[in-house]
Length: 221
Ligand SMILES: [Zn+2]
Image 1 (cartoon, rainbow, N blue to C red):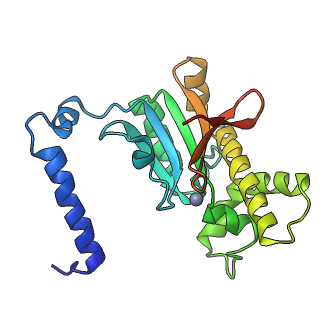
Image 2: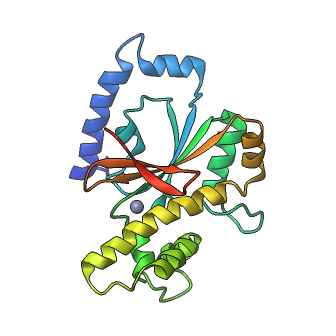
Image 3: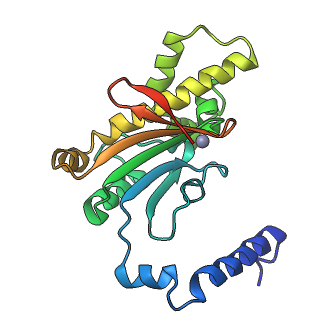
């Protein structure tokens, strides 16, 4: 097999452990999930960052969460123009077919995508920069943070602005979720609720968006 480099071997070794845990028992989790089909109640939209795996953070078992991950856990607004909408199709499938009852937008501290947006990194040298174009979704969050705070002059102040933008971009994604007609309908029917959650991977704290105040409140652990 051509995949025999050490990182791929590590993946395969990990799969063997997974197999032992989930497939070597007649009453295993997978056999049950296979018989019943998947019916997760919650969709999580998370960052691709290797430190914020939703299944690890939530202790979810197979079949429990429906996940889409992308750079900076962003949700684009509803639009029928354009082309390959991976995130929007996952949301549509979750709400219309699986009929999840919750969508959690899970942001996190030290987000590289948000940092690139805030500090104008990844400046497009050509129109082919995928990250800079993708991060345009969070432009309103950036503008709001820049308008409400003095310009950063130190790395510490830059971190503070990035942190604010990480939180604001969660709010933008929640607002964008509300632009999808099938989400509006599901909320109106009382079968779907939207949640913003922020994981501070430096302090290990979790906070949740309060819809009424628009602020994030610490969740005691
Ligand atoms: Zn991130």
